[in-house]
Amino acid sequence: MLEFNKIWGELAVLEVKKALNIRQLGNKEKLPMDLLLLADPSREMVMAYAKRGECYVAEFEGKVIGVYILLAARPGIVELANVAVAKEHHGKGFGKRLVLDAIQRAGRKGFKSIEVGTGNSSISQLALYQKCGFRISGMDRDFFVRHYDEAIYENGIHCRDMVRLSLDLEETTCKG
Ligand code: COA
Image (cartoon, rainbow, N blue to C red; front, top):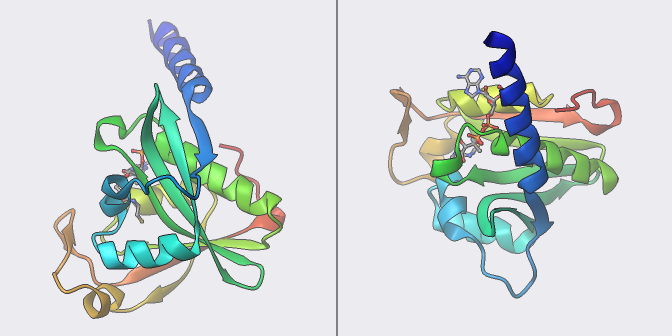
């Protein structure tokens, strides 16, 4: 029974892999704001970095269910500025697919390193990024206190600090 469940699980993952289409959003297409706001409650900040970055969307069964934004930050360094999956599709492996796609794309574009930032309270996001090969590189203390009007709470933790993570694209080992 255990073996059957394992094989069934692997087949389900393969089906999802086949069915997910990740592509760059066209210039004239509307930003999936509902998704972007799941990752960042500030519409103003989202609009600002979306304008400067490249937006990628993930389509599943004809619907946009995921998004990420890549933003050239400094020479050779790109930032994964936002990543989000529609709530009804959480926990199916789509978030990991998006992060791995962003890493691969950034590597193909010739960036040396990819960075991401998340809140000190974002436990599952910290897990996801580290499972994709990111390592903690620093912390911006009180970032969320300085930049957001409303206090943010997640997992019962006050989100105050921005944990910075980075991944060296020249020595990436994570295959997903
Ligand atoms: N401990 C250990 N691992 C954990 C974990 C925990 N507490 N919580 C999640 N994970 C792991 C999962 O096990 C999985 O790894 P695995 O495939 O090796 O088992 C991985 O993290 C992510 O799972 P996945 O199903 O791909 O994630 P998802 O599709 O639910 O998407 C987000 C993840 C973060 C994109 C999604 O929850 C989301 O859109 N959240 C709102 C927006 C957001 O917060 N964006 C990030 C801003 S920094």
